Image (cartoon, rainbow over all chains, first blue to last red; front, side, top):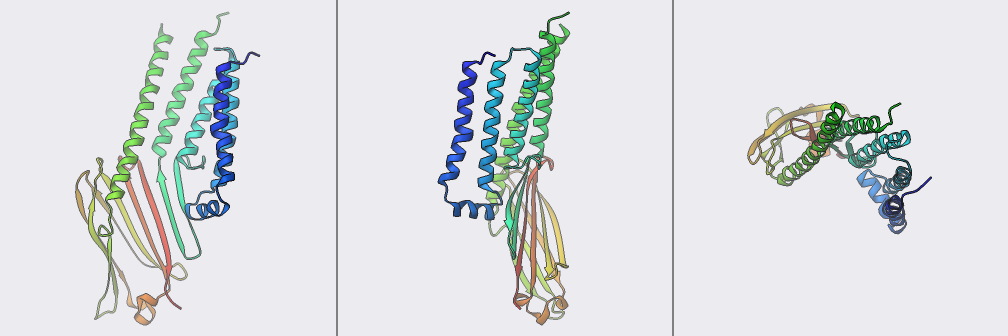
Length: 152
Length: 155
């Protein structure tokens, strides 16, 4: 298996910015701040950074794998589709501020025994458009694969 | 030839859609910021008064909503008063469409029956004040909703 040098460089960049940096930040930010932010903002910042790190590892793996397969092969098609779906998940994650399952709806704030303050930001239109874009991109990859496949 | 054309059409359509999505996102989020930035304390000023004959309380929100954005915005505003067991005492809601760059008078009046306020002093009554505000734009396709609930009162 031949690994592309450019892919290794990009994978390293992804590891630095999406894995090393969030984990280092988590260590430097005071625990009290993380706790206060979680209570008031309704976001578990420590968990969010860990999730970003996991996504960073996945992205690096994708970049390395994509750089090592032959273009227009069956593996290339599978990886290409998986990579596009992965980007869609990242978009859902960003729009939902850490929640994939909300599909583009971010929920901030929290509640205590006497008060509740919740803010919901609705970006489901953007999430829907992103799904359409990914579907078109997948169709494009399939056509590209079928076109480039040697005829028997 | 046909496959080539289909491939080019697909590539062009997803590229156009990417640009359109980015534009919608940026326009939508900046318009929300402009509208919310224009909401001041005088936009939704509350006023509490008591009817001297019946003893009923009236809570009124009135003001002028200013839309400094470049898209029309629909504002939904709902106020609910709940007792300590979270039963609804009084509720009212209103919707206002604020055109881009213009202002819209806004009013919401709610009556709280006198028998729901023990001792006649609303400041000492135990219960919850709940406010729901929803700002929608782009034909209700994008927006923001805030739900606030505060417990209040004495013994």
